[in-house]
Length: 273
Image (cartoon, rainbow, N blue to C red):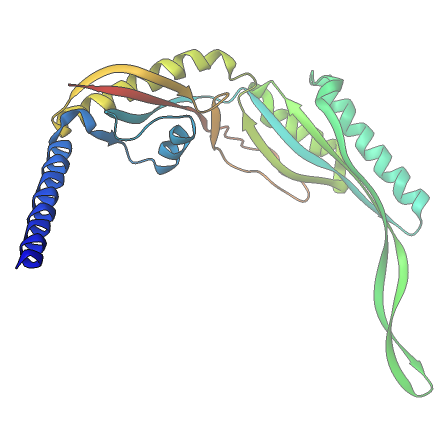
């Protein structure tokens, strides 16, 4: 009887202790100070965790973004020459004549020497596959028929008002040896726009945090952390690519299109009791 009575006392104790723990958990779950509200950015939440942001201590974490549409002010051309001849000297001389004419046109158009860079110079043999008869059998062999010399340039053009005319003159100077691979448009110096981008990104972050607080039924507190996710404004291109093997068009139409500068700012807000 004594043993049975002790077991019953132990069971009552376990039941009471379990009810006590359940009450504590319920109280903690209902406490508004333990709410944490995030926007939909798992990578950003992980980054803040690494920086010491403690989950479950009343935080709202958001990423503010900004975007500015701009007209490009610089173009990058990838072009050059490719010459074929029966021997290396002739191919090299022809390529040199063509590329020098193109560079002269660039300089006359106001393009600085520092904005003209050689990116590749190649000399390689050119073969032709032929069939020969040997001992009554036909076999294929490669026969050297000449050499190819290529000289490719990277050219920065800052006068976009005359970009079409400049391209026409350059390619005309190169003649049939010209090779035009691509044109890309860009912003020469995005730094002056960073202040406006940061301002817009912070305003966007505050708006997002205010909405999350309102929708979650909590009161938005002070900002406890701000992190500039991007060291500089990132550029998203919305331009047209231009590439031709040999240019023989009377007038070339070039459309620079537009560019987008963007920035992200990560922010942490307190949740007030």
